[in-house]
Image 1 (cartoon, rainbow, N blue to C red):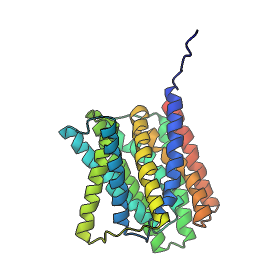
Image 2 (cartoon, rainbow, N blue to C red):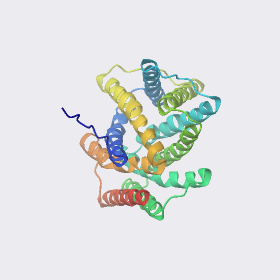
Image 3 (tube, one colour):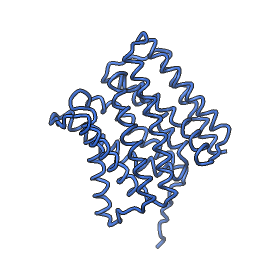
Image 4 (cartoon, rainbow, N blue to C red):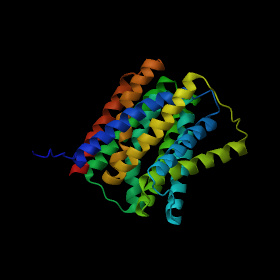
Length: 303
């Protein structure tokens, strides 16, 4: 009787599957966010989302008997990650989606790969191959083309300009948040516990902001709101971020952040199907540049 050998997938296969999973999940969350807008105050919706996600993550720690405690240095990193990734970043994401189509915000987020290369070069001393820089720059060019196309399509409407501006600020928040996530990794914080605390800190900061600004903590029990909240909290937050930060630790934050470049096709399909959005040649050209940048970035990582 021979034993059947179970072969483990290669790191490259794991990376591809991780990117695919995150891209599909986050590709649908851009539209799910629109189901939250105008129903419950924006800050309240984000607080509910990450508060629920944090509770789930701490519950996983309890069930798997993994200690949830962090060291002082790990808590500092988790606080910074919570502030910039789960408070600043997502607040501006929701504000942006109130003003422009969700797919536009998704494509603008492709700029995160270029920003991560810059930030990690400046603050972490990490060098990247020329192909990676070329790929990220090409992705940024695609973001610029699509953003310009949308602004001219909207006849430079102030609301559209504000939406694009909020999306850019969200990307900056995400980039800084990735730096703090990297600091947590260097401090030895496990992905599960670090993400749980980061979401908890982000939730607390959003709650304090809501109290100061007089946010009404209402809730909607309509099926669309409840189901979208569950999708955003469970899949868009717990599942996707655990996969994303695990991928970032194994393959680098620049490559992981380019998940954002693969979500636009899904986000565009969702926008066309449910938001009745339409995209011209400029938007499609921008998407092609973004995807071309993704190919160069992956080749740069393989070099």
